Amino acid sequence: MTPAQTAGDLRVAFDRGITKPLSWRLAQLKAMRRMLTERSAEFEDALLADLGKNPTESQIAELGFVVGEIDHMVRHLRRWLRPKRVSVPGALLPAGASIVREPVGLVLVIAPWNYPVQLLLAPAVGAIAAGNAVVLKPSELAPATSAAMARLIPEYLDRRAVAVVEGGVPETTELLAQRWDHIFYTGNGRVGRIVAAAAVENLTPVTLELGGKSPVYVDDTVDLAAAAARIAWGKFMNAGQTCVAPDYVLATPAVAARLATALAAAVTTLYGDDPAASPDYGRIVDDRQFQRLAALLDAGTTVTGGTYDAASRYLAPTVIVDVPRDAPVMREEIFGPILPIVAVDGPDDAIRYIASGDKPLALYVFSESAKIRRRFLTETSSGAVGFGVPAAHLAVAGLPFGGVGESGMGAYHGERSLQTFSHEKAVLTKSLKPDTLRLIYPPFTEAKDKFARGLLRKLG
Ligand code: NAD
Image 1 (cartoon, helix red, strand yellow):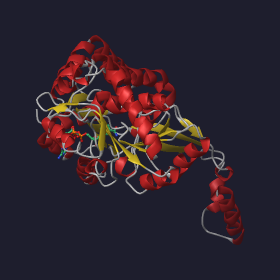
Image 2: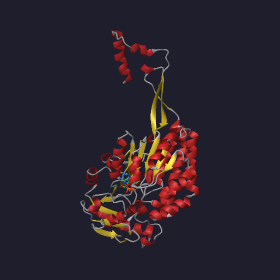
Image 3: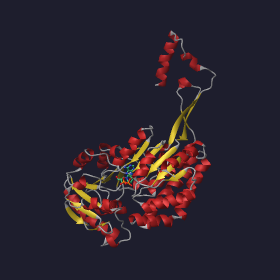
Image 4: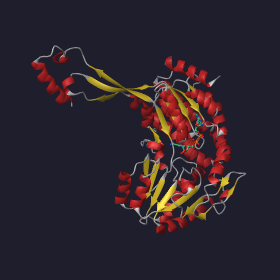
């Protein structure tokens, strides 16, 4: 079946109303949960093959993450779907007003390769919970995971309304040429623009979950060893191929020197003296990404790492100090295990530097000073802010997850996912009697004019 035919079939299923009942939505979410638990070994093997991802890390950041998202959704869905009453201005009374969440229809989810389970299925949880039919397009760069999705999803979920379309650019291009009611894309900004341009054709709303350089600011008020442990964990997980990974660190030269030593020690604690031999350390996804990253190593002074093996696409966890602001590694999102530390004069300089670039997906501040934290919060813009911890905000279901500006538009997770994949329909109910509105019907008189001016004040 072609991607276009799949989309057509799912459109018919949606139009027949099979995805709308709450019972269908809950059954699908529970089936997805069963798939992730009963067949976790197959997904873990696929993630190991695609990214050298350790099975424990796969549980934490991929399978377990989606299970948590499903459980949260299942627990709250009935309540979140209840019409939400809103107040009616006095001048319109008697009347009742409410917001009703209705499914948008047919949804396309396009996922990247770096968290190929989480970033395909977490959006699907929201799309299904909202009562939509959904086509899932996994990344061709994580082929084992893509194949596992294509094999297992039809086995567990309702094939009439949930489909997987595998493939690369030609298949995605064909999908994008169809009419969708929402397109949810995670990946880089270049393709994000292609997706947005295709969506314009049918005025389809899009969510773009993109990337960028997420900065870290560290000052001398914190325990640097503890901060280094957190930063190294967030940076080197999945070999740095995490959209919310710390991209680079800003610190004064004195802090940078001490932090670099602490980071080197943290890497050893996490992955031993030889990370190449650690079963917990991942690999770069493909040769193209590997070559791109290897070319970025030539900057500043390497404190730890800097070594690599092209054949196994191993790139050591690397920390570099004295990195000039115009070094290649500071010009693009790194998206790999290289952590440059750039010297700044202090918070003013750091804030100016961050604010002069694209708005990042996340910003991390390690400072015990409430004043410094507040300054970063109010004087910079980013998708999220983490004080004292990188990346973990995305595990808080109550927080919307998404970017701003170059790091994306729209958000999801928890109730925000339901909102993303629903149309919030405004409903006003007013009985025909008493007909209070007749006071504003033409023909207009002086008395009505007086009344109208008063009414407008009341409405405003
Ligand atoms: P990728 O190469 O797997 O691409 C993502 C998807 O786009 C794939 O499904 C692919 O088939 C499709 N695609 C690629 N080229 C296309 C084209 N020309 N036309 C249509 N579709 C096309 O993944 P990637 O973009 O390399 O992912 C890495 C980027 O994603 C990084 O910038 C990272 O920061 C970002 N990211 C963001 C998030 C987030 O949640 N905000 C999460 C993960 C990754």
